[in-house]
Amino acid sequence: MSYEDKIIDTLTKIGAIVTRGWYTVSERPERPPFGKELEYKVEELFWGKIHLRNEGDLYVLVMSKDIFNWKDKISQLKVKGEIEDAAGGLLWLKENLDNLEEDMKYLKEYLSSLKK
Image (cartoon, rainbow, N blue to C red):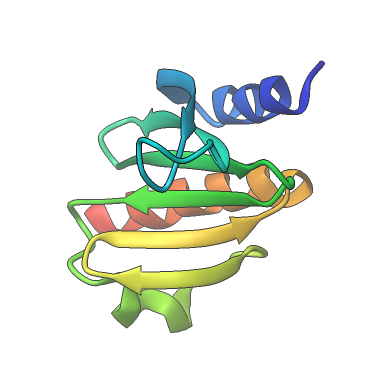
């Protein structure tokens, strides 16, 4: 199973739906691709992108309408990935495949608990 397939399998395990499969991304249209992304959705809780750099770095973008500012929630988050950026409804995590499933499950539970 390829690395990309393992990522999709991990998303599927937590109940995510891949809404757009892997596609290449560049800084600008005339530049060569520096990575690839896929888009996902987890119920009505959150959605985002999985970004895989050509060098192997893995980033997760989490967008949620229920979090008005992730920056205010950073101290509460118990993720193994490194928080790269948090602003408004956007959260960027630098991840690795070993922790991806656990962190995505945690975010799903965390956001579910905020809805109650």
